[in-house]
Length: 239
Image 1 (cartoon, rainbow, N blue to C red):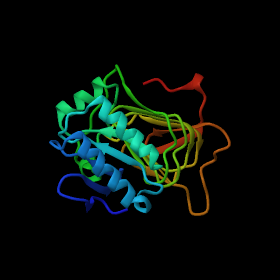
Image 2 (tube, rainbow, N blue to C red; image 1 turned 60 degrees about the horizontal axis):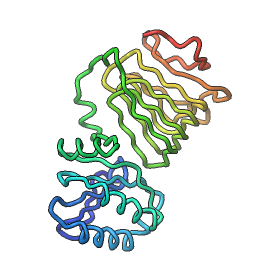
Image 3 (tube, rainbow, N blue to C red; image 1 turned 30 degrees about the horizontal axis):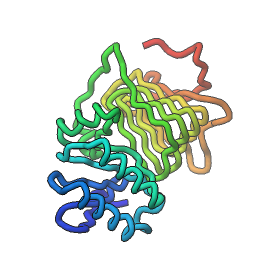
Image 4 (cartoon, rainbow, N blue to C red; image 1 turned 90 degrees about the vertical axis):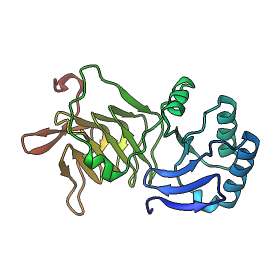
């Protein structure tokens, strides 16, 4: 899917396709009733466009409201659309989402990720916990570790500054240590990614082959290469 292809519904509500998914950007000043009406119209008019897509709700600079957010989620469900995440670009709006018990995702362009300087994560680590299967087209970015309770399907992308742990099958693209942490590792119950990356090192199966995925496995950097081996919790490498 092309990045940032704008689809103008009117001058207020905006819907666009990005590598992270389909993003609904909410206007700041529009009254809640009008917003819900526009969302309803957008969902009814764009049914085919939204099929098999991950939808991200971006409050941008709008102040999140618990009742409004609940109604929007119900509206998406009624139209058979899965809401992947809720985020906001303004710091105050992001803080409000945290107060509502949300963990807003940081939507980062690929070019921005490549410009970010390398850094080591602190001893006290935090993780983004995602409890769902990621379908093709989904992209999740964590500025710490990332734990996915579900599968990462082919065509999906998971990126973390630290470790990536998938309690399921990992068949998409995975990048651990995205900010330069060379000790990062990738663990999955079934490790069969289309591309595997730790720091700046990239590995992918040869044509017609796949990683041996008969048992839980982990990948980590050793010297100038990447090692994939059986994953046993008792022999986890120390940092």
